[in-house]
Length: 113
Image (cartoon, rainbow, N blue to C red):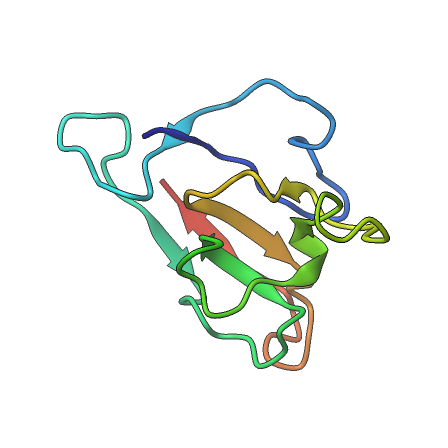
């Protein structure tokens, strides 16, 4: 299953604005010969000590923790006023939020496909 890539940040919420998909990457299975030849990220997953910080591939059913600022749970929690990944998105996706923090003071992150 192909997943739309969107980098979620305060200044660049392209997915929330309904922007066109730039590319896709199947985080569930790397298909040889497909468009998703490789994926690499720095810092590695789980590098942030705060549950509110993140830069990695997430999956509602598999991730130990997902920052609340990425999740839109208004269907089950009507007073939720933040988040852009709807509760109906059940497969893997890439997200980032609050990368400038005590674990990474300069906030420099990199994801390469």
